[in-house]
Length: 539
Image 1 (cartoon, rainbow, N blue to C red):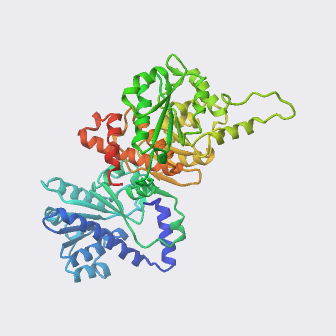
Image 2: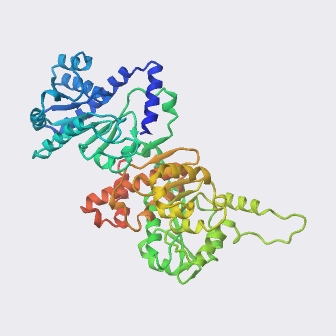
Image 3: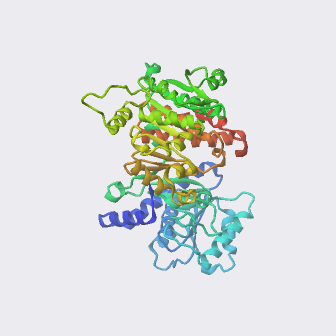
């Protein structure tokens, strides 16, 4: 599902109109698609009665076209016109010919008929205001929205509310909302999801998001859109096949360097998640005391014992880890490492190749340091860096040049601040823009975690995960995500695609865990981990 700003959508529609797909054509397609989405609701309805709140703009036109199609399918249809003159309006006339009932808000000053219509409706369609709306809300519209909310709140069995493109009163770029917005059960987005719908408070008011096509596939400006919203169809295309004649080598080896005595669970969660993502083999490189704690909980893993100081990986671990690069098809470093100085040296030696570099007497040739770095980066398997690994990276000069490109970086806002030097609030104000800027600057895939996790590629592509849920805001949740991503990367999935699929699966697992447990406050990272098979069910 493509993700666009209001200006981008307007430009695409203008190009389409100039190329022969008229605004009337687009409205017809939009209204038909809207009607089909409403028809899906009829499977849960005893009756089939729909009321549309119809404003003066294109969203109101989409709603009127949808009512015509629903009338043809024997729905009882009513249109409540607000600031829309029925005289000479061809869409209103068309609906009247189809048997629809028309009422103007100008003839209902106390909203008595509006309340009565809502009381018998199975579905209320919100087509009052469109994506170009900017706050503040005008009084006339505010009164209609207030009256609608009051009528719905008074009912024991309220109707489904279906918003056309966006709930009326939302800013579709910023996500800001007027207090009178009618919360939707479903928002039917025309062609693409508007950026503001994946921001709060808009997201909480929009309900489920679905997209209907309006005929824009051939437009150059449409094809140029490189930002999207993840869904199950996108993830289904990413996940690797699992043929019947497979063996464990078919699905790769994930090497995970993680853990310390302070954070042993991080390594365990990441390793298990890599297996749950489908990796054929997971090799855990951990401090020896951590292995003793984990072994019985992860018997499927093979182990590398790393030297440690006070339970944290010491510098000598770099040589041991690097010896396993040849067999590994993906490498995760970071979960639960801690940020002690010995571990910082471990990361630096690992990236700079000092642990395994041959010591030779310089006769005739001296290799430049940049060439050594390039050779070491080329010898490393595809890489995922998470958690403390990111904070330790930030201390190394030109760290981005030492990673095999493209690596996958999975920072939360605090870790992104450490990597960029920006303030967390600055990052949160423009998550998509910041992720794209630094993905391009660093040459690596950035997974900026949080509500509506952003996956940004160095080539300008970006995907948002349409989930904002407190069940995912839990210690260890990010370790599960990192494990999922490295597990997919180990199977040969490309970096950007691994990040997109891993983040989507992680979010769905969090939602499923909350549903199973019944309280988002009680969801643990282990519950998210255990829900991964259910999230993958059907793929």
